[in-house]
Image (cartoon, rainbow, N blue to C red; front, side):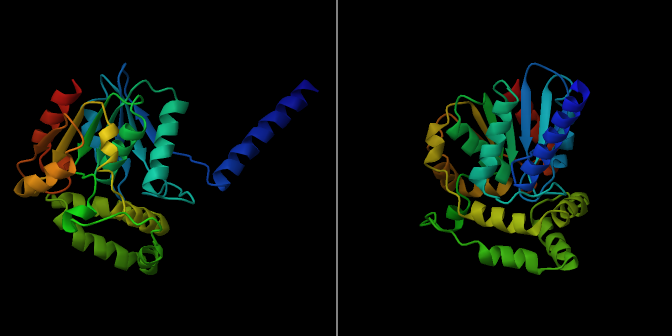
Length: 280
């Protein structure tokens, strides 16, 4: 009888897990490596796999516990029913709390940088430091100074555009656009592959929500040390960049000397030097 009960309990547990996934309950993809007292969590940018951090992690896994995330619906990870900045922030915060991770350092690139900012603002006691790699609190305000967040943002057209392309069209669009984001052209096909293996509805929804995100006021609540690494072109508009970060007191804003948006690829030596000094 005990054996039968054990089998029934196991079966119920498996069915429960299946039910949770089917209902869209968060199942965050996290690749864990390395050992150490300090945990570093890496969050990639839009349409990017956690593999974007491969070279970065190699420099830290010998003395730190590294957790590399790939967000739901991205690069082959199963999607969830909802893809928004606030929801993705929630599932990362829940992951940290559920796994009892003690004050991790958060490193985020692009959209992942905004997730790092929102996480540190909404959960100031949860993280120890954050590193923002080429992200702004409100990207849309850079081109539209009067930008205001829409309360009821309709993402239907963006989702339709993303889902309306076939694989070849979507891949070609990425290959044509990526040279404006990464100077190291050997990376283009890899980044494009991450995009083509992502769920299009997820891409449309999260991109639309990201364009409607403004955390310029929210970052007032961030109290942990913050390093912001920015691409060289932003140095030409420093007043606008500093205005975006004016509410984040004590943040270190630093500008790369070369390359484009993927700083970890394009100015690797400088990037690694700044990151190492800040983390240590």
